[in-house]
Image 1 (cartoon, helix red, strand yellow):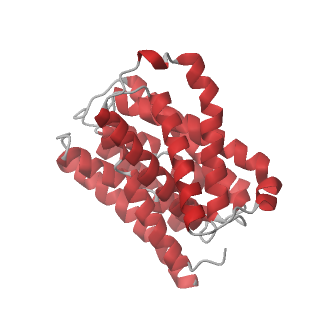
Image 2 (cartoon, one colour; image 1 turned 120 degrees about the horizontal axis):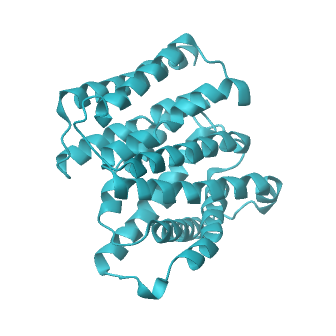
Length: 292
């Protein structure tokens, strides 16, 4: 509440850069996507509660009760969003999955004038179009340079729809402290996923190897507890369109890391697409800076 917009942008950028590395961690885990999502929610919640206790910060239970229905709704959307995203990573490249997932900011940009009463400027509209073109180029759809199972694309687009819903729902939680909001959302995600996992997975038959558990711990602490706190905490000081367009740094990071670490080729079209995505995010910020 009352956070400096410049600090909020910095926190947002750090969070989305962390999100851009999630695909690499998912590739290293020999666990079902639903189990990873469940573990991520529980670990992230416990990390935030522990850090709050260390800092002597108590949760505002009154604020939580006032917004509880929206918190539960967004938590459930987050949990199933994770499952679809992790499944997308299984069936296609990290770059393609991430960029399909980041159709979500375009959905937010187009929906925010009607749902959130935020003005869609010509510049932002053009930036959204440029970002979409950039994603198409990076994915390799036009050149067929980067293949992948159609299921991966569909899972990614499904995750995008859920992610866009989370962004829009969180605009109704702008007056909440980031800690209360994130703790309840992650806890709700875990609790909602628990019966789903118990009904669909035989946990006793899974291979619980040390590397997978270590990666899951990192995913829960760094990419969930800490990164989500930064991400949701920045939303209250920034318009939904700004959050959406800055989030394009996530797919750029994922594409670059997949090329360097997983040896998924980027090529000239991919490089041009990455430049379009990043350029669109930066150019979209110029009017915001002038008004402040």
